[in-house]
Image 1: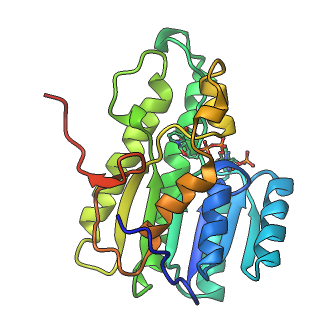
Image 2: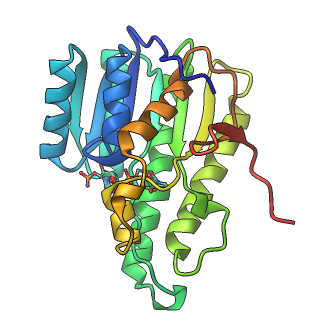
Length: 249
Ligand code: NDP
């Protein structure tokens, strides 16, 4: 995909999981491209650091400290955006947790429920809250962070893999619902990236061998472009191309 930075001047972008990792750097990229960024996460320190960086570079952000298991809180974000702006141009549903790496039979129920609550239900509730706002944009763009785990058979990654397969299924359904509108909905597989989540998943790995989240974010940014035509696909960052989900033969 073309790496030309889109012009997002005057556009509004909401990024979840903006306090660190891929979400942090994607929020910075969106702001540098001209978007006003609504940055959502629980860690106020991370959000404030992001805000400082964005403002120093001449951009604008609104910080929303929120736990994405707070469903009423997610609804309030939708209401507040509606009142202040009346539309949303870009959604980046990026927040997620790994849960635990363990055999399915050993996963504690509360851990499984938490992975589903944040990765799946939180994402769905956000989609529900902003769907009318994205439809109100002349070029609504939704970017849903998935993972290669959604399609691969990987021992011990069960809850996380199931949650990512679920968000991809939602993204495809949403894309089909909106295919005749100005809204484009795509999932992204960022590939292994040097973040806190990856370090938790692969403690023995040398992080220096992995791409920095700023590199990955720069590759995802074009999915926010008003010129984007693709919808209902998965953008694979490593391969730098869109793919369609296929059931294994
Ligand atoms: P990080 O763990 O570095 O960051 C996760 C972000 O999600 C943080 O900003 C965190 O903010 C936020 N978050 C987690 N739980 C909640 C919650 N309950 N409420 C609100 N925000 C929450 O992860 P990455 O940057 O590595 O991952 C980003 C996305 O990319 C995820 O969806 C992940 O599954 C996906 N991905 C990552 C890969 C990698 O190698 N890194 C590979 C494949 C996919 P806070 O804790 O402040 O709330």
